[in-house]
Length: 349
Image (cartoon, rainbow, N blue to C red; front, side):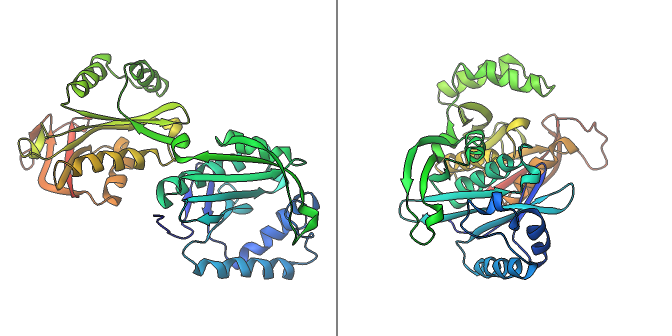
């Protein structure tokens, strides 16, 4: 069953994807609505005046009243200008499929912006809405769109003629692409070959991960005493987390409460819904063992993003205060704000 949320704001490194407002008409008119090289692939003539743009835009804005409307304007953070749009349509709730389409002003081609927007919306569709397969197409005379789709991870599935009776100018040969949720992102147990990959990913970030820690995870997992959730994103190891069936440290030790530990999404893979997918899998497994799940999160700014993620997912501090090196700190105690300074949190499942 799909989880319809409507058009939600999505933030990427360079872009903000949000709902249209009528004042976006000026940028739309300036950046693409008057460009015949753009509009010819969308079945409408270049706009002759701003009022025509406002009229079209108001119709799109009115569609936001529907919970299954997913239509974003693409805002370039650097200039705060609207540079295009992206939307999901042709949603089939029974088959859990949909289509994705996008447009970016010619002024902003060849900068990776269309790919950045497409990846963000694919992640939203798979991880938030629950769509299982997404399809799209582009006219054979518009090969640049194909490059965007390929860079976004979509798979070419063939060329076929498509007829548009309501707009004959659009009829012609089209290249078709698709991607399934499993192709995009899958969560699986740890494999021996993951160890070198994980170490290399940490090294690329300038971090160190002891091999013996990862080898111990693998051994303990294979002994049935630990669950390791590895995220494979388009064929690459993108992150992981561990789940202890019973917390071994902190305030939940010995209380038969599962504990998430060592949760990581490598920087180059962030903002693709990977962290959410890992935590979803860990929480699902924990729910089979207990009605509560726990975790500890560091307190320095390096853990800021994790702190926000946990709070948004409903984790709350357990009330035992701050712990350092597995010991609860007494009131007014001094400590070092390093990775061993931890706040424990829990969530009812």
